[in-house]
Length: 402
Picture 1 (cartoon, rainbow, N blue to C red):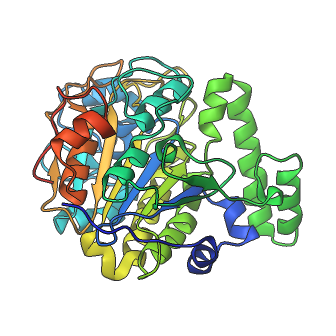
Picture 2 (picture 1 turned 180 degrees about the vertical axis):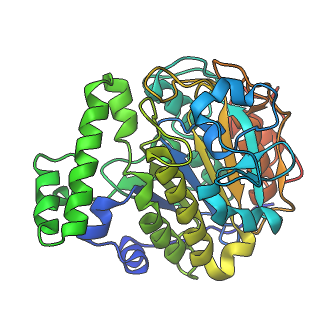
C-alpha cells in the first residue's frame, strides 16, 4: 500500500508554524518532510539517554527499591507515589497528563528497547539509532532510515522534500531524498554571544532573566565535569521544558491540509549524570516538560490525531543504580513511547527485563519497533523494510499489533 506524497513550501511552512526569531532560536530543533498525506508520523529524539526507570519504573521488580535507592518512587496510592499502568509498569507522577492516553488505548510503551550498539558514546549510539544500520559508520554514507522509508513510501522519484528549522539536517532524515537546513545565521544557538543576546532580551523580565541565569549556571556545572561527547549530547537540543513550544508548532503544521506529514523533533538534556532527583529535581522537571509537550502536540494535531503516530526514543538507556553524584550513568536498553489515535490499543511491548545495577538488557530491537510502525502505518512491505530501509536486517521481524 502506498500513498501519494504531500508537498509543502518553506514559505507555507513558516506561515503554518509561526516560526520567528524568538521561537526558532529557543525550541528544540524541528525538521519537516512530505510523506503519505493521510498517515502523519512524528519522531521525538531524546538526546542524551532518558532514564527509563524514572519515567516508567518497573516498580514490582523485587530489586527495584534496593537498586534505585534514593531515586525510587513511592508505591501507587502513597503521597507522591507513582501511577500504576498494568500491574508491573508505573508512570512518574509528574507525567500524569499522559495517563488518559493509556486509558483511552492510545499509548504503547517498550520498556527495554535498544539498537545493536553496545558502546558508551552518545555520538555513535545516536548514529546507529538514526541510520538503522547494524554497525557504526563514521561517514554516515547510508543516510537515515526515515529518509529511505520516505523514498520507499511511494515517492521514490525524489519529489519528497524535507526542511529543517535548524542549523543541520538530522542524520535520520539525510540521504537521497532532498533535504535542506534552514536557520538564519543570527538565530543559531551556537554562535558567539547567543546567550548574551537572549539575556538582553530578557533583561526587563525578572522571571525569565532569573530562569535563564539559573539554567546557564546549571549547564556550566554539568559541562565542567563532562567530556566532549557528553557535552554534545547535552546541548543537542534545548531543555525539555521548552518542548511544548516545538510541539505546538509541529501540531499546527501537520494538522493543516497543505502542511507537511512528517516531523522530527530533537530534544536534548537527558544525560543525567548529576543530581537528577526523584519526585522533584531537574529530571522530574524535564519529564513534566516531555509530558506537557506530548499533550500539546496531541491537542494541536486536531483532526489528524486519529491517523497519527508519535514515537519518542533515546539512543540508549541508563543504569538502574544511581552513581555517587546522585545521577545515573550510561546503560543499554532504554524506553520507547508511542502515542496516537492510529494505535489499536494501549500495551507494553517486549518481555519485562529483570532490573540489575548496570542497566536493562534489551527485550526489543529498535529496528523491530520501527519496522512494525512503518509496516502498519505506511504499508511498507517486509522485503522493502529488510533490504532497503534497514539493510541486512532480515533476521529482525517487525513487531505486530500496534
